[in-house]
Image (cartoon, rainbow, N blue to C red; front, top):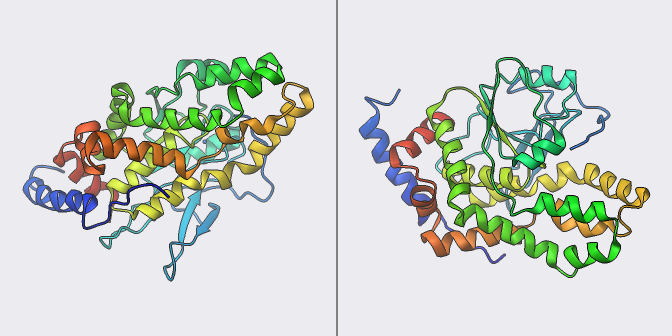
Amino acid sequence: MSRVRTRPATATAAVTAALACVAALTAASVPAAAHTAHAGHAAHAGPPAAAAAQLRHAAGAGAAAETIRQIPLQGAVNVRDLGGYRTWTGGQVRQGLVYRSDALNRLTPADVTTVSGLGLAKVVDFRIPLEVQYDGPDRLPAGTAPVSRPVSDLGLFATLVGVIGSGDPARQEEVLGGGRAEAYMRDVYRTFVISPENRAQFGATLRELAEGSGPLLFHCTSGKDRTGWLGYVLLRALAVPEETAERDYLASNTFRAAYDARLREALRQSGRMQNPDLLIPLQEVRGDYLDAATARLEAEYGGFYGYLTEGLGLDLRTLAKLQSRLVR
């Protein structure tokens, strides 16, 4: 892939070395879109629960496999605990403290009970108001605070509503065909780096995680782009190897595949799209989308550390607290 790999000897090492110093200095003062039920899903009893579905991905040649900890729900397909990953410094991301997901507006009563077992203090919603208007607010257990923190999709949701709603195959091809959908997605990912408003929302979420007010879940609509980017950034900030963070990002394709295929078939059968496969580049996560963001990150900030500190506004004290709270 075209992405510039920042190895432990470079940017990530700089972050970790700086954090070690700051941790020593501050130690005295720093204290789940429409879904169908999935056959065979066990109830999730809270983190870490043996009932959570486990998807294993090779961690590289000769390395032990990593486990991606899905929380099986009927009304959301891409809900996961980001804990459990090994860091290249010898630590492990704690389970039960940070979750990523798709929208939670279609949770069933049983799902709400499952989510209640996670003990979430906050659910951060990156959807824009138009998405919430169309799909509805999250269904959350009592005591979980919803936080609206919109991250721009460059008008993608509104464009799709108009183009699909038109039922015009020529219009749909004009907007989405010929590589245009892929180009749109790359532009969306670049805004995660260059938009001050988007950076502010991501930075605020990471600061909340560092402060440790309780387990936190963040999500967007599909739980793959805005959510996938922040999940990738968080894991990298915690010294999870880049390849592992990328596999977590790409795992959305596995979790979403069946649902997304059903959606395309429903659009075909309804007559709204003759060629619903035009949507595949928008439904998937891809390495070149991630490349678009990381290339812009390198250009704007000189590397990952610069994005964390200058772009997201995280000082070394906050980064140290993030490490201390989320890595054991």
